Amino acid sequence: MAGRAFTSDLSGQEFWLIVDKGYQPLGLVFGNCVYSMGAFGGWLANLKGAFRGEVQDVSRLMYDARELALARMQAEADALGADGVIGVDLRIDYLHGGEWMEVTAIGTAIRYAGPPPGGSRGQVVLDVSDNRTVRPQDTGR
View 1 (cartoon, rainbow, N blue to C red):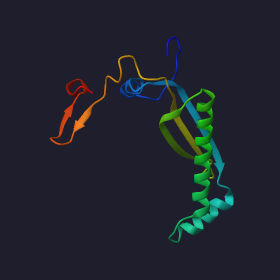
View 2 (cartoon, one colour; view 1 turned 90 degrees about the vertical axis):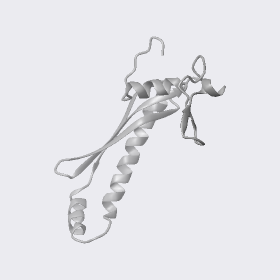
View 3 (cartoon, helix red, strand yellow; view 1 turned 120 degrees about the horizontal axis):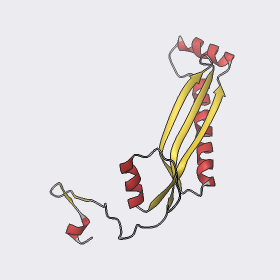
View 4 (cartoon, rainbow, N blue to C red; view 1 turned 60 degrees about the horizontal axis):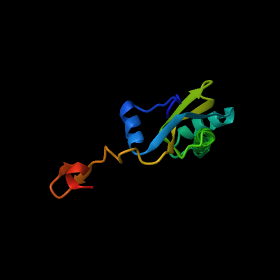
């Protein structure tokens, strides 16, 4: 991370936990999709809303829009050379009188950089035999 600025949605505590485990935050990654529900879809949803049961067409649209947003976020992470994305926040907003649905996925791309110097300093072991927390320096681990 030396000399490299990045943006992140991680809290300070989450940031240090990630670094402590040997990961390097690379930056904020974003993906979104705006899906048209269509006038027919809105009409069908209103009609089916009068009855019980799943509105399968709308559920399918929501699933497809979510998958597109996540895939686009993942593509941004891949472009940064990330191993994964953490702290993912999914948001769904309805626009244009409920005829459009926007799905947004935001997270922090990370890459494994190896163990930090001095090993994992923040490791905590829970001894379940007597419900006490034991630090590695107390156990020789």
